[in-house]
Length: 144
Image (cartoon, rainbow, N blue to C red):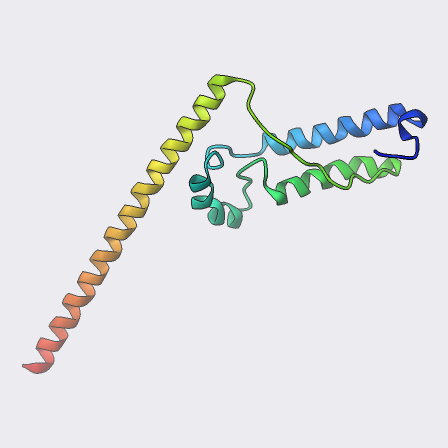
């Protein structure tokens, strides 16, 4: 709420809109998965999969922030107020143990992803080898 003396005219309405914006942001943050969003590599690794599933993976998720604005406007539009945007400037957990747990979860997630990539690579190599063996057998059978 900016300009036009809104601070003086309707302080209660301004406070209510700010509280609704905070509630909408709280709902957004409460539905966010943090374990894959701590590092760039962790975020990039699962972003497409999570996006396809419609799952939020970080506090800087544009679609999630847009849904927070929509959530906020569901209430504020009743009073003639439209919230244009809600932004997160920075985010840092106040609890140091939470930060440590999130970091450990991100490391575990990255390790699991690495193992999955290695397993997929091995499976692909086995498929290529099996295809080559099958082609060799067909060639031998055709030549005999």
